[in-house]
Figure 1 (spheres, rainbow, N blue to C red):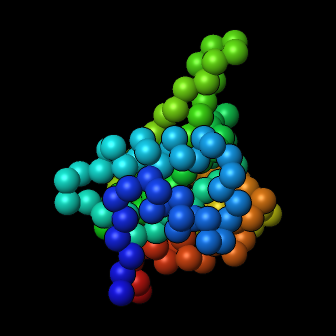
Figure 2 (cartoon, rainbow, N blue to C red; figure 1 turned 30 degrees about the vertical axis):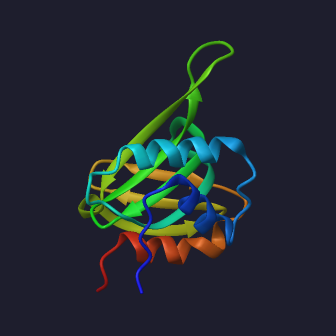
Length: 138
């Protein structure tokens, strides 16, 4: 049976089965993702990462990641001032994802527009599950 989730607690529970989700910012990230789901959209896979960057530029940390049938959501914290942070979200169409590879503690997602990099201590066991969640079966 496919997994279908629409609430932050469900995403946290799913990710928490194999990852440490004790950082409170993950709950915020999953809440923002769920608030931005289309009415009929369901999350089928969720995980967390320590950092996310696009084309090597400094990016976000405490990342919540959710995959739906159409899109991949990446939501986390970024710097908003000297002592402030803010939550930001990046959404990618699954149709734009060309490949997903794991190496050296990083998941690299090549899209038509950019190279996305997820970093984290416990991503290796999830790399293949994430690849299967975002790429269509051959």
